[in-house]
Structures are given as C-alpha cells and as structure tokens.
Image (cartoon, rainbow, N blue to C red; front, top):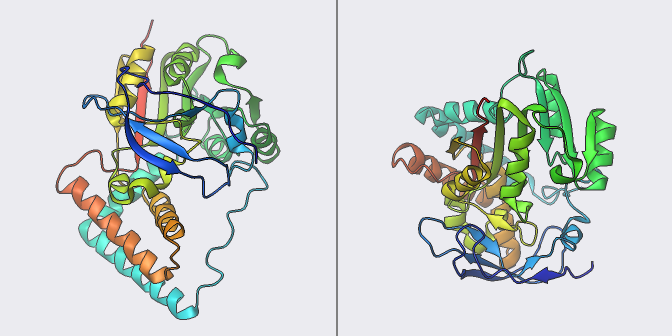
Length: 339
C-alpha cells in the first residue's frame, strides 16, 4: 500500500491546547495500512479530546480505506477454524454461564432493550409525519435496509465509491457518492439524520454537524454514534483498544467533547448517553489485537472468560457504581428547534 501523506496537528481541535502524547508507534493490524501513528490527548480536564498527530491529510486519507470492511468483497476470515472440539464446547459452556449470571442481575434484559433501540439508532419506526431519513456514511447499506423495513424513506451518503456501488446493488435505495458538504441538499430536507461511527473519521466535525443542522427540518433529529475514549474498554486495553483504529480514527471523543461539537454547530437541544450494552464486538477485537501484538495464541475458552469478565465488570460499574461513561460507544441525539 502507498504511504499516507500527513500533516502536523499539535493543537486540540476544540480548545487549542497543546496535546500531550498518549500513545506512539500504533500500527494498523487489520487492513495493512503502512505507517506508525501517534495519538495525543488534550490536557484540559474539561475537554479531553484525543487525536492523531500527525494526521492523514484530507487529500491522502482515502488510502486508509482501500481494503476497508465496507467493501462488498471484504472478508474478515474465519478465526474459529483451528479451534478443537473440547475448546469449542468449553467456550460455549462459559457463554451459557455468563448469560445465566446476566439474567440473574436483570442486566441482560436491559442490554436487550438497548440493543433493540440501538438497531434503529433510537429513532424507532418511521411515521407519515416523520419518515424521511438520511444516513451519512452509510457504508454497505445494512442500516439503510433495516430502516427501510421500519417504514422510513431512506437515502444514504458515502464517500467510498466501492461501498456506494455495493450498497446500491444490495439495498436498491438511493445512495449518493460524496460528502454532505459537496452534495448540497436543500434546506429542511430530512426528518432525521443518522451517522453511525463516522464523525471520528472526519477532519472538521463541527462543519459536518452544521450541515446536518441545515438540511434537517425544524423539529428533526440528528443521531450520532462514536467510540468513547473514556470507556472501560480503553482503560483496560489501553493502546490495544480496537477503537483507536489509527490511522482512520482521526479524533476520539468524550461525552462532553461530542456534546460541545453539537452545541458549537448550533444545536440547542442535545442529549448524550453511553450505555455499556454495545461492548461485545469491540472487546473481542481488542482481545484479538492484544494477543496478536504480544504474539500469543490463546484458547477460545480463555478469550471467552476474559470477555465475559470484562462485560460483567463494565455493567457493575454502570449500574452499581453509577459511572455513566463506561460504555464503548457514545450516542448523541440533537433536535433542531422550530422556526
């Protein structure tokens, strides 16, 4: 792969403070993008934004997506093919025990409620009064298809040409190639806009949110989801936390910094929350990354025990210790005021 051109970004995007080195020497294990990358954190306790320094330039960042999972021909491989039968049975038994413990605490029930709501980005089904939806960064179009089945009239937007072609062929829905700023939808076009794990890929997130505000109808809702740099997963896995994802994740947010971006963009009604019920995929990937970096081959049973232990501790912190920022993802819902 080609080396990605980058530019120095020593200062915090939100408050201008000089960044403090958080990690250096990060590499892309999943998609083979060359280079060694560093992350800096804002030292301002009221901020806490994390970003790449240097950061891939706007003209070069596309190189990080040449073999991305949003492409129709992407395959993650089968990591289970070498698991022996005893290990597989033992791991399944561990998962059963975990589910029993979760049900005993009622945490499993709450997790299912969150997941059901998260499947529609907390918007629910479309209605005749509120049904025109734009999905910014629609990828392969899976979410678009799901929302279409829920009664929404859906359009998608994606900057990756391969992903657009695949999404159009699979969903049959309208998918636009380009950025929100270049497409230039008319004012007050959509009842809702969703953007799932996109804003961390964007150089200028406030401009993106401002454009979302412009094309939303009065009373319309913007829903964002993005990795949470303050999550329990990041605390445990540190530089092996999969959501660091250098060099594609340009900036990583706290609940406060994501809210601040929406407020500066012009939204007045903004809510953020960070449930711990979306940890499974991120934690499994973080465990795999840690093992790969350390050159270890661990049994499926041990990996299952580590993941189950992690999730139980995360739920304990959220429900018992009332730590609202332990979840792996932040959700933001911002509502455009009526004229």
